[in-house]
Image 1: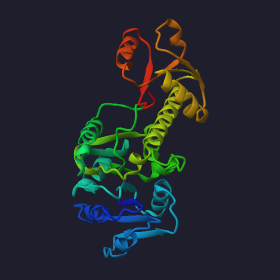
Image 2: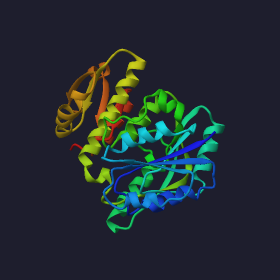
Image 3: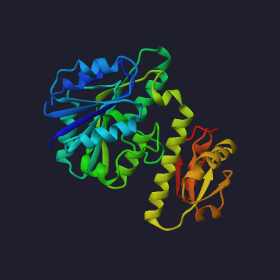
Image 4: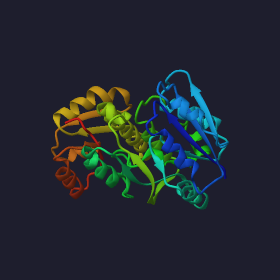
Length: 310
């Protein structure tokens, strides 16, 4: 098995040098490293041109194309059977590639593997977010449609399965990794090595921080798409009841429903037998835990998804 590591970078001059060094110092020596410079306007191009390691291949884009497009290009050029993602501002621990490749080789029923992370940050005001992120990622509790509980930079996956499911979608500007993860989930096993193999950098300039509302909207759309696809496989009954706060239901109807296929109805959280005629989707909010407990007790089947529309 050969490994191809791929990175998309846009104006990553502050961190990309350390990120690349973390890959070049891996205990697994047999790999190629493809880096796509996505039309950077800072010193990124100069940093990349200084790399002398023959395992590294640089592709320069004249104009900014977006990370998903650049990762598509890198993987098309990759010769490896296994693809490892390395985000341009993060750090891979030295044994990351070796451990993940060994897992996939020894467990062929898995098509994608991630790992636990440790957050890297300097601003004190990011401490709470770091603690939340580590709790979310460093857990093996199934959260198939709640939101992504995997760190994109930890992905290592089968190129064959990646091609089978159509690769990264450029439909999403930010949550393209969660979309890919969901489509992997439907055709193969996915998992995490329960060990910290990756340093995930938190900083205010990251794309997901710059437009939180768009990030959350994309993630919610992907979650609902996944639920729709799952229920298709179970039965042809495609009636969905959306439960949440007034604001959440309004935003969902305005922003999410037009992009989806299915029959959606909206209700306040009032329990009655008619709910059993629907697939129930709960837009998570402060009072939803009590409501989901009632649903569980009365034998209702439901999906709970992350929602920031309150």
